[in-house]
Image (cartoon, rainbow, N blue to C red; front, side, top):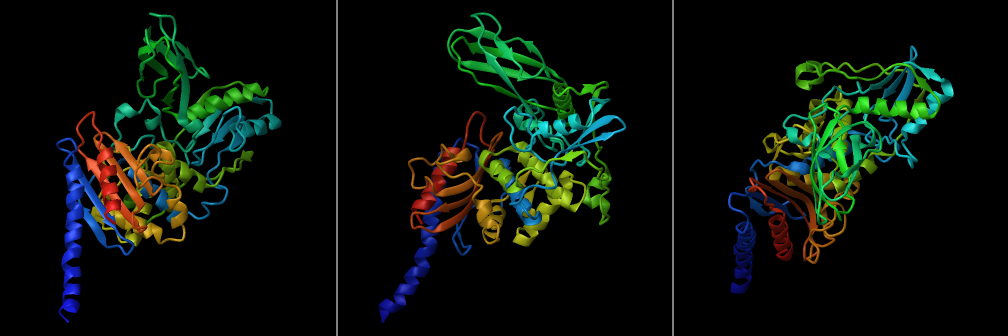
Length: 477
């Protein structure tokens, strides 16, 4: 009789003790991190009960964990993500002798020689079949307001691929790949530009050895690229990926080259057509009135890109910033003008449906490059549990990197019990690391988690502490 009374008592008293013991193990891992690092972690079981909660409502910079909010909002608000993208494709039309190359938010338009799908050459062929002489070539990205960079993004990221300009008319990921190879010892390296878009000021030097310590910079909206640093005479090829500040103008410039190759004479100039951001692009300023969108013009030819679901995989697996920013604007176009604010409003509607408190997040972009973004572990984990219960939840989860297997987690969790059993979005920014998603514990149970590290001292990383803490959680469950 006493045993049957004591057993429930034992269960009641030991369960909290187990949770406290697990939290202490996690906190012991965090204690090994560089002094000043601030951690947050929430782990939920299959029923949504918190197994671990360390600073659960703290507000952290989420870095690229922001992409989870953006891609989930796309699944929640856009229909037909698994079908060919019939709304975002680029188009071309002829207007009074001018060629107008229009973008509608597709991130995958390509000018590569081996392009097979979503190719700029297809639109050039359409113009060449229609005429042999045009006046101006104009890149039109007015489908979205001109917000090439998000609020809170560091200006020093702009010259590189991670901070390239965002435009409704995007070509080749809005980056130019430049090959730099060693010269003779003491001389400048050789620079190979695939097309003569940038002017190179080459201040780099070839030195002994095999190390590459090259850097590059340019002024915003300048096409003069300064190359600095050193490259070893035995260094292996490693291309530089330079961002494009005016993607619409670049796409038009590249289109002119394709037209010329097809015998179409261009007599005028290459330019871009933008739409300035106005108060009408903010859903708060509109106060319920619909945004004014540019009229749809008849096209000579229009592309139909692959399904957006394929791009969601690239965004989450590779942490592709530009594609995430364009997806946020595509989400916003459903509500209004395609502004960042419209996209954030759609995210807010999704999070409200998921039961995430408004105090648990703030977003200023779709990729996580903004230092203004904030997310709480508890709110993020709540969103992840809600996603798992949606009809599209399995497809979205399949877009996440897998520990020790692929994407940005390919080199993490190898040799641990979580190799192949953690499915999560990474995040890295100045003084910030993040990881949120799902893991399969030692018991076989699937747990939901969200963890952040902020204020990480310079030249340090907290990823190994985030990973070690999750391994400890998996071992204890």
